[in-house]
Image (cartoon, rainbow, N blue to C red; front, side, top):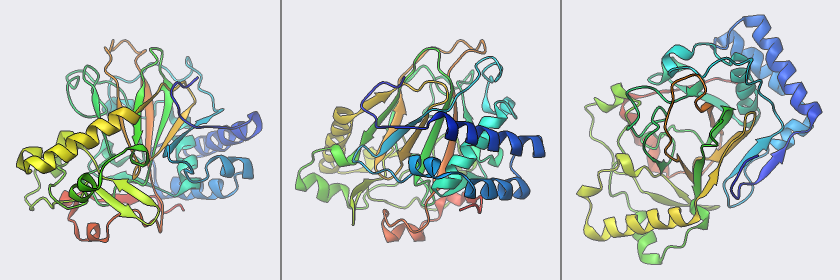
Length: 330
């Protein structure tokens, strides 16, 4: 069971079995979860045929929590094999669950992949990796993964982030905090809605970190028609360049996000869906064993066509030379 004040949407046994059957059929046909145009087209066709209970469970995030946990799917702890030692060696580990994630993502929007991350795969394996324990990336373990917007450096970042649990014997929590629940005064809002600082690419994007273009200053907060949204990654924001007043406002935002944060400890089969414009997410520290039993998540990113939750100025950003690839499966 998940912990924390996260809304839960339950899939009954019949729609859960329907999803598993659809994924297994695609895996049998293609023999891999490594995406090709043909596999993605089959995912799109299969997703279009999924039943109404699945579509209802995957309706847009509809509370100020900015997230929900999808419950009802299952994972065979023995059948999936050991937790991979890193994403680069994961290959087709848990392949049928990759395809389940793609089906879910396709119901909600358009799955996206990054040319510069995990070999361009549409579903990532999030596991602790030796030598990366102290980084601010999904491969870390020993440190608190600071609350952040996924791929905050890029204007083409996901609208929705999906984290599907494969294994979590130690009940390690994902943290999440919604901008719609914070309390800030008008002066702080005014400061943080100005484009004052850039957000730099994180350590998972080696090529982007060497990009020679001038980093664009971006606003931390934005007033959309539906309410506040945010673009936030303090670990990769050069706050030392800001005025003392701006740093103080940013610090108060960090404190408010910490105040409203919830901890969600996913169980195998559960999928956390986060609105990446409303919610920052992170992870508590843990000690990795590297014995095949460590925490293992699947991650997918979703773009929702037509959403107006970001400043129009983002369209002119260079994205540090990185390109998001769409699955073309709406």
